[in-house]
Image: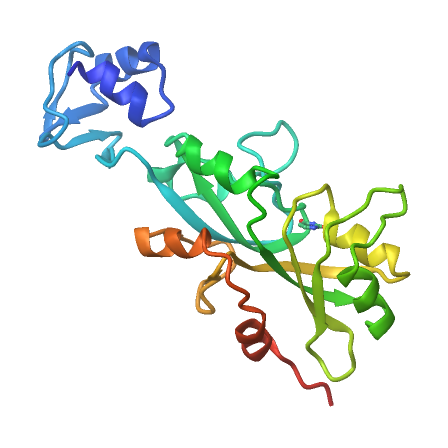
Length: 251
Ligand code: URA
């Protein structure tokens, strides 16, 4: 296959960019500078680098990020810092997009992928993949609020939500875990607002049966393995495991 064709599939460089990179000696094939963008390469066996960074051989890549506060879930923005800005250089030009959106001030589990089918499957409103969040609230979480949420709460603008589940995890009932299986704009914050409460901080802790690794620092990433990805698409209720993992006693 031609080098420029291969690189335009595997990276976000255009064929024109690749031509320029080759002319400025930034591309190597098996440690030898590739001067011509139209040279032939063996995509299975050749090792290609751009600016000394390896170009991955696998067609698809999915990363998991522990998203920190203050970054928007977009690929680029003229004003705000995006989650792509947090990626190590070798992942910055790999056509990765955030899977769904976390608000700028929401932290936790965010997937980034260049697999369009997976992006579609995970964000499709028809799939109902459960997403679990931990929220700190301004007011105590009441049994009445839990009931409203369980019955499918109506938001202040009249939008009806699907039945969801929320449980207090701190003795003072200011912290909850909530599971939703749809993705309306600011959904968790608006659901809690509809119960007369206010979300002070929000973190996504699991998608499907995949739980964010507890040892992953904010702003860091890991590559999702096939096993991890299978868990994302499983829909068994993992509420109890999450409550046990995140349960807090307040003194
Ligand atoms: N619900 C929200 O309100 N915000 C998020 O970022 C995710 C879910």
